[in-house]
Each structure stands twice: as C-alpha cells, then as structure tokens.
Length: 113
Image (tube, rainbow, N blue to C red; front, top):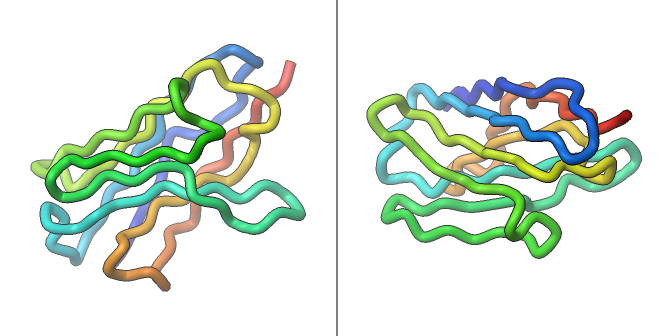
C-alpha cells in the first residue's frame, strides 16, 4: 500500500483548503479511509473517517467545518477544510484502516495570519 497526500499550504484564519490522498496497491473501494493530523509536540490524532459504504465520522474538533469524501474511481479520499483556525495547523495524513501501520509523507497545513 502506498499513500500520497497533497493539497496542504499556508492559509489565513477563516480560510479553506482541500486535501487529497491517493492510494495505490490497494483495493481502495472496499477500504475504510481515515484522515489524521499531528501538530508539533502532539500525538497524531484522528480527524475523519469514511467507510466503503460512505458512513462518515468526524472528530468533535472539526465537525461542521471539515468534509471527508472519496472517489473510488480515482482511488482518492478528500478532506475539504473550511473555517480553518490556527489550532488546525498540523501535518495531515491519510490512512487505510486495514493497513494501520502504513502512512504517507503527509501534507503540511499552516493556518496563520
């Protein structure tokens, strides 16, 4: 399994970003996909999950601001982030639930004025 995250960057508070994670060497459509994030000095934390059937779960800290989605034809899971705040600054990673030890390089999201 290989995971490649993209779409991070520097954004002002209140701004938006759309992250993407493309998976290879995996039967993507049957896999539950998660987004995690890790801020400096903090442990990696769960952000959002989407199952193969489209059931979605969010961390309380991002509910109402972030939207997870997937495109099975492109082997890609997305994270649309809105109303970003400085506390959302972190490296964002995707993960396939069935392959919990496999991680991509992550994509840096920095929210700052």
